[in-house]
Structure formats: structure tokens, C-alpha cells
Amino acid sequence: MNYENHNLGFRPNAYDDIGSHIESSHAATAQGKSQLVKASKTQRSNSSLTCLLLVIFGIVLLIVIIVLVA
Image (cartoon, rainbow, N blue to C red):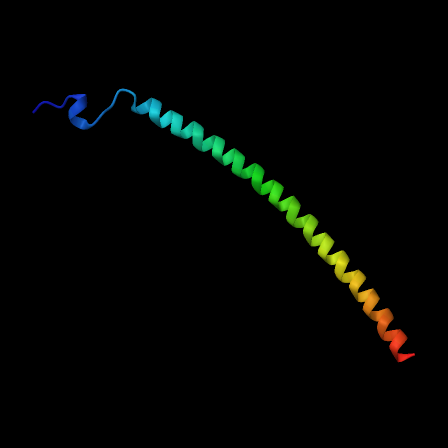
């Protein structure tokens, strides 16, 4: 039986294709990591702002209650 490369489905540029897929996957992963870092910073910033607004709202509400009770 003759087992030449084309009988096994081997393509001469298959390694180049794999290499290019690895490179594009690496680039996509790096971009994804960058976006996750940016999203994390944005979420942290939004969380701090929400907390600050809740504290201000609580203080205003406390003042209103004190004025109504007095």
C-alpha cells in the first residue's frame, strides 16, 4: 500500500496555516485581555460613583427627616 503525503491529507502549507491561526489567536487574546482590564477599571469607577451618590442621598434624606421631625 502506498502511503504518500497526499494520501494522509497532508498539505505542505498546513504548518503555515496553523502558525497564522496561533498568531491571530494570540493577538485576539491580547486584545481581549486589554478590554477586560479597561472594563474592570470602568466598573470600579462606576461602583465608586454609585456609592458616593448613595451616601449623598442618605445624608439628604437624614436632613429631611430631621427637619420634618423637629
